[in-house]
Length: 155
Image 1: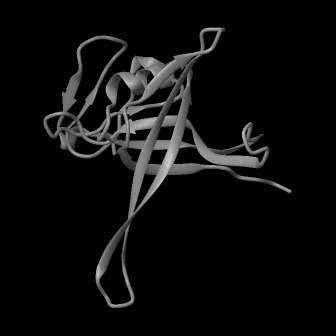
Image 2 (image 1 turned 45 degrees about the horizontal axis):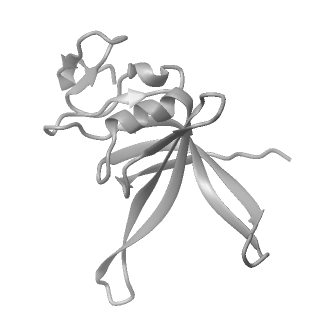
């Protein structure tokens, strides 16, 4: 039987990304993302409900994410669901946690109200790529950013 595991989320960081390193030198970046859902209740009144999701990025993508994001900043995340299971040391009970392992991320707005920029898994920490609406900046391998008008965007 075929399976498909893909998660796409956009929300605000609930805490500053924390980067730690394995003994082998691989970066592990962990942070929380608050994703809001807006809906009408039975009385017709608009309500907002937040879902809090733990996200983990590995390697250079995680280092780059932590470099450019902070608590409260909006991010667009693509990844897959993972389930960790363990026995609680104190109670002996079985425990589990569902979280997202990030594959790609995009900026969703820049400082000063600019557009968006994407970092794909092929680009790692170099930060290249393009994406978003209106004006957007595109970095080219560490060189200066190039700003394009919406009319020049390739989409």
